[in-house]
Image 1 (tube, rainbow, N blue to C red):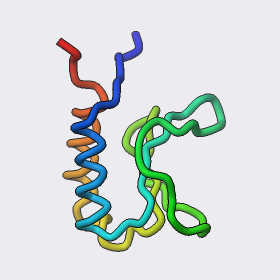
Image 2: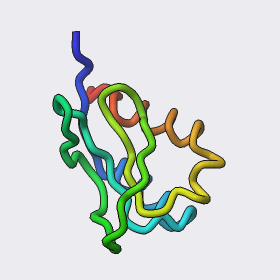
Image 3: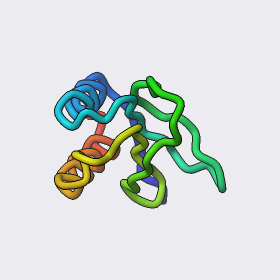
Image 4: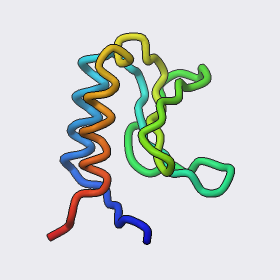
Length: 90
């Protein structure tokens, strides 16, 4: 059974916080659709360089322009993103 997902203003605020704190440039989450990735939520890239890829789970990944500072706290950030992606709407 698939888990229900949704995006929220809280998640956008969290991505904005990550973008500022870790200086990632553009940052967004994409959902895997077969062999391709589809934009799910976030802020479009500011530069034209290839994005960095950080897997959240089998269905979602975080993309950003620069993950140098982000990698040190990635496990904590990934846990919080998973909770936000799959939290109940009730």
